[in-house]
Image 1 (cartoon, rainbow, N blue to C red):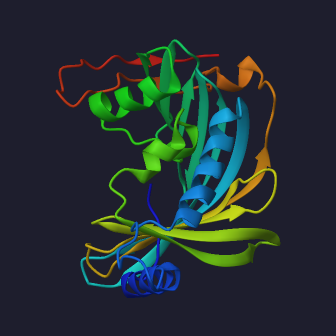
Image 2 (cartoon, rainbow, N blue to C red; image 1 turned 120 degrees about the horizontal axis):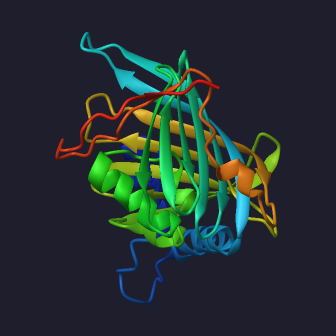
Length: 263
């Protein structure tokens, strides 16, 4: 997972939390992760994991550092639709660009909407295994994948060194609990809705080891907890005039397979 917070601020806040909760008569050490922050995160992750089907919209802002040294911000929108354990649909759109992914339990299709090309590959029987396959064999990172895995908590807590709870504040009118965590390479914050449906509302990542510490910001909205999403949502229908090409693995051994669709 990836988030944002100025590193110095994060470390200061973590230090304040630690000092405030260290018993005056006990040992001077305490767990690096505030148990309140850990509990809030776990509750949100467990709620996601137990939700059999859902969809969510995300607006993304990401910093890019140009060769000139200027830091600019690029934007995109993402739609995720999931039905556990073996259905996934992703729509990712930016300026004149877009990528879509369909997984129906048997095959995974990746489409470049700008080029109107798509590739299809046989896929394992679960979302988690398919995400691993796309990353390992095709070097494809799926947007919002931390929301889709079977164990979101394990996915986001890997390599976490410290964490804190920073109070309550609203995100687009939704009252949230604000938590943050640090690893060696990133600081990340999460705003979680306060209530019986603790869904993530905002995510911020700071890549603190990269030049100018670029940030990634995601605002989540339009959460829909559907009991059973229709199969059609996860089935790929080639658009008229689109071109089929082979997904090329990292080994580069796959041969191109072109097939024009006329419908």
